Amino acid sequence: MNPTTKRHIKLLAERFEHQIHFDRQTICLSNFKNSIRIEENHKRKLEVSYNVDDSNTITNAVTPIELYDLLIKILSRFETEKVVFKSEEPIQLEEWIATECQRNTRILDLKRRIQRENSDHVILGGNRLEAEYFKGVIILMDDLSWSPCNVVDFPLE
Image (cartoon, rainbow, N blue to C red; front, side, top):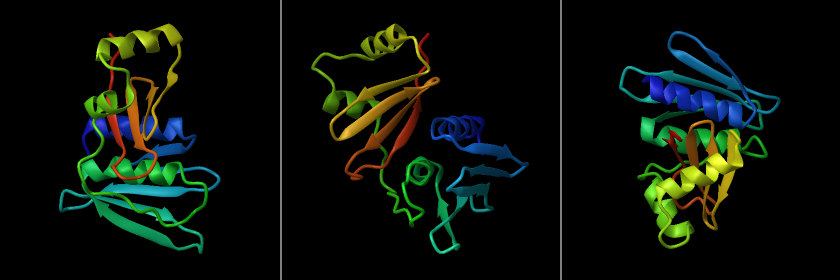
């Protein structure tokens, strides 16, 4: 698993208040509700296993692009139900800006807004497509689950 993906997983775990443990080939995330295991398989996919209501475990083989959608949905779920993830192209930052921001909003405007807030966590909002800044990344989510969630690097410097 590449270092950027590992860093994004670590930040998502922190954002959604999960403990994280790294082994050689495995990442485990947990809290009072969730138990999640992510490991690379030999087919260049990631195996994501997580608990559901009836003490069973569901395992999905996902591509790195699908990982964020599945993981965000598991980390943010209210009940321990099965999660349905999308395998399409995830939301991109430019799409969120075009759909949810005022005309003429630029990436520089977003960086200034986040810097003014002087916080590691800033809810950027949105109507259907929602965004939040968290410690150097922007987490993009679709309120209606039409488009897959995404995590993109967003350095302020």
